[in-house]
Amino acid sequence: QVQLVESGGGLVQPGGSLRLACAASGFTLADYAVGWFRQAPGKEREGVSSISSSDGNTYYADSVKGRFTISRDNAKNTVYLQVNSLKPEDTAVYYCATDVVFYGSNWFKAFGSWGQGTQVTVSS
Image (tube, rainbow, N blue to C red):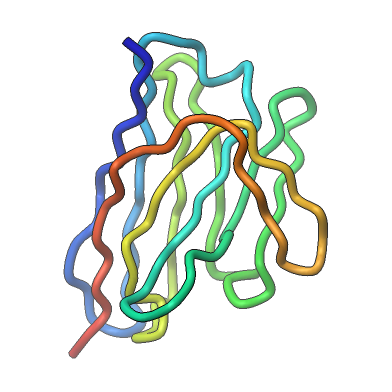
């Protein structure tokens, strides 16, 4: 059964950090470009970051550049998103997805599987 499961979300104060995880089962995540997306209440889902399958290139939306870091642990079949210096506007449900293409200008598109999401809430 092909499945993506996100974890690591929670409630954090402004300036805090979290590490989100996207664990795959039923397939090898290293074979795919993987991305993180987020959706805040009342807003459209937006791409945050992606990592390629072949050369490990990483891409970030301008709004998170310098604060978020995407990485892989192929032995654990998992992709991580380290989120630092969190702001209230980062509050959203964060999703991971496979077969993600970065077109530039903050435009990410996923063509594969999606996880169920993990909630990140930034509030004092």
